[in-house]
Image 1 (tube, rainbow, N blue to C red):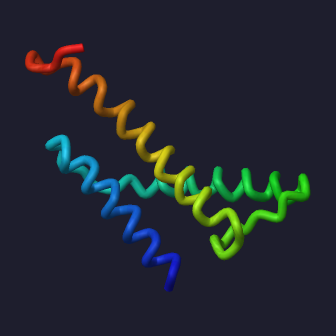
Image 2: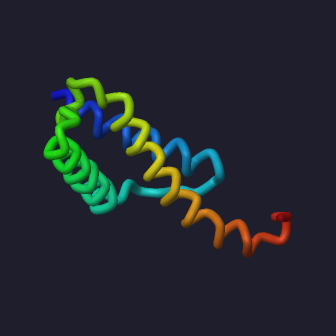
Length: 93
């Protein structure tokens, strides 16, 4: 149940971020899946190195995992927003 709730929060966060700049969007589930798989792979590598991080978010790394996921979503958002902003005449750099 926590996983479903966390996924819902991620969807809301992404939709709110897009709505704040006037972009209507649907959540890209493939992107979230790729990011989640990458996070799990990084945590597995860290566990092999003896750092004892938690994959399910119940350990010490839950805040860091959330920050990493938010940062990845923000990077994707910025990468998609720059071309759109560059085409607008009202945008100044």
